Structure formats: C-alpha cells, structure tokens
Amino acid sequence: MRRFLPGEDLAAALDAAAEFARLGLGSVLTQLGEQVKNAAEAAAVRDHYRGALAQLRDRALPTHISVKLTHLGLEVDREGAARNLLDIAQRADETGSFVWIDMEESRYVDVTLDLFRRACAEHDNVGVCLQAYLRRTPADLESLFPLRPAIRLVKGAYNEPASIAYPKKQDVDASYLALAAELVERAALEEATPVFGTHDRSLIADIASRAKERGLAKGAYEIHMLYGIRPAEQRALAAAGTAVRVLISYGSAWFAWYMRRLAERPANVWFVLKNVV
Ligand SMILES: Cc1cc2nc3c(=O)[nH]c(=O)nc-3n(C[C@H](O)[C@H](O)[C@H](O)COP(=O)(O)OP(=O)(O)OC[C@H]3O[C@@H](n4cnc5c(N)ncnc54)[C@H](O)[C@@H]3O)c2cc1C
Image (cartoon, rainbow, N blue to C red; front, side, top):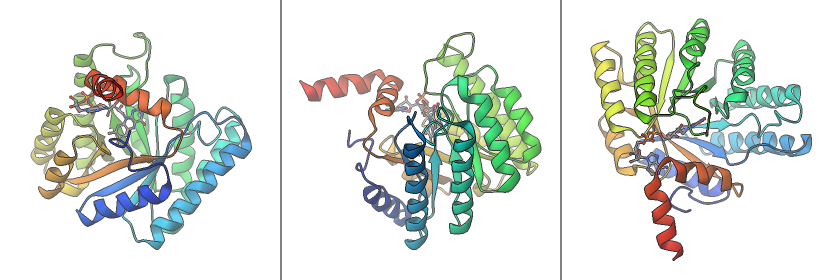
C-alpha cells in the first residue's frame, strides 16, 4: 500500500507535497473516499478540504486539491453537493489554490459537467477531468471550450460497457492522442489549459513534440502522475522543464481506489500476491 500512499493522514500528504516542492514538482492532494451516505459525512469531507487548503496556504505549498462529487454528497443531495463544491472553490480562491473535479463512473458525467459549468461561472480556479475511454468525450470537450476550461485528460479507470467506453487499449490510446492534440491546439489559441494525467511515455513524448511544433510555452500544459508510479520519470520531466504535478492520495478509505490501481496493471496484482505469500 505504501507504494501508492505516503500515509493515511493529511499530515503525511502535506509532508510529501513539501518534499515534491523541494524537488521542483507541484502536487495535488486528494482525500480517498467516495459515495458518502449522508449530508453529515459530506459536510465533514467539505470541512476537511477547507482545513487542508488553510494548511497549504500556511505552509506556502504549490499544491492543488482534487475532489470526487460522490464524496461531497452527490448521491445524497445534488444541491448539497453543489454547495459543498462551490464552498471549497471559494475557499481555494481565498487561499490561492485550485480545485480539480475527478470524473467518476459514466452515469455521473452529465451532472459532473453541469456542476463544473456552475463552478466556472463563479470561479476561475476549477478544472475537470475527462476520460478518453468514453465515446462521448470528444463532444463533451467541444462543448466546454467556450468556458476556456482547465481540463485534466486521463484514459479512464472504471469498468464501463463497450457501448459507452472503448474496450481495447489501442482505441483508448488513439482517443487520448486525438483529444490531447485538440487540447494542445486550443491551448495554443489560449482557449484551454490542458493537463495530461498519464504515465504513458509514448503519449507524453507525442504531446511534447506537438506542443513544441505549435510553439506552446512549457508552462502552458502540465503532466500529472500518481504518487509512487514512475517517480524517476516525474523528476526527469520536471528537470527538463516540463510542469509536473504528483497526485497524492491519502486517507483510510483506500480499498476501491487501490483495486482500480491494481486493475490498471496486472503486474501489480502479482506484486501484491508475492508479498502476501
Ligand atoms: C493525475 C491523475 C488523475 C486521475 N484522475 C482520474 C479520474 O478523475 N477519473 C478516472 O477515471 N481516472 C483517473 N485517473 C486514472 C486514469 O484514468 C488511468 O487509469 C491511469 O492513469 C492509468 O493510465 P495511464 O494513462 O497511465 O496509461 P496506461 O497505459 O494504463 O499505463 C502506462 C504505463 O504506466 C505505468 N502504470 C500505469 N498505471 C499503473 C499502476 N496502477 N501501477 C503501476 N504502473 C502503472 C505502467 O508502466 C504502464 O505501462 C487519473 C490518473 C492520473 C495520473
């Protein structure tokens, strides 16, 4: 577990963020958890992030946060989740930080994009994740451009039916590349702020060469990777001048999240089994 998590509490995540900052890397913090069962749990998550933002400001860390809408109470009360999100965005505004909205299962895409649009109407420090494996994503991306959005493009981590998401890796990769090319183009026109959330070396190289061709400044896009995955690559990219952030997850509710990390790479399952045996 420690391979993917600096620890279960916020203090460990903040220390890891400080260490990344010392090495010239940014970070994004996310408290693990999803699908809270009542408004009190959702309010506790909101208050946790408010406290985390205050600590980031006090320690002057170059760190963003990333939230899941079902962690903020989406399945309990949609308006309550919207209020929690807007409250966190307001607090991030006041503390000089930035809020990313994770994308969860495909049944949440419409409501996530709705709440992202609402947050954008009031704040310019909010971005949303889009998943390249979804067949609908090119249209979603196009619909967001009028907002000059901050988009974190990922491949997608949930089990989705083939009618909704590309089942084959090669098709997901091709979709990612096409969406990334569009984002680079829009960034060159200052119509989007792209973040590429991937550990895929060949995609990252392709994005870098497209960005160079389009004359994009190095800071005009960022690469985000997960804590513990390809750490040497994270440092090498940052040393070469690419803006890199590491997404640091922490908290006790790690089971669902950990299972998704294992599913991404069969070798991880063997690694865990070997250690158990
Ligand atoms: C910053 C960030 C935010 C994310 N946010 C979301 C989100 O909001 N919603 C969502 O659905 N998904 C999210 N994801 C997960 C994403 O959808 C992918 O499941 C994950 O990033 C693996 O895809 P990849 O692009 O790295 O490519 P892959 O082709 O899966 O991996 C490329 C290479 O990276 C290495 N690698 C990748 N994953 C692992 C792993 N778990 N363990 C060890 N090595 C690995 C392997 O060497 C692999 O060959 C996020 C990912 C990142 C990096």
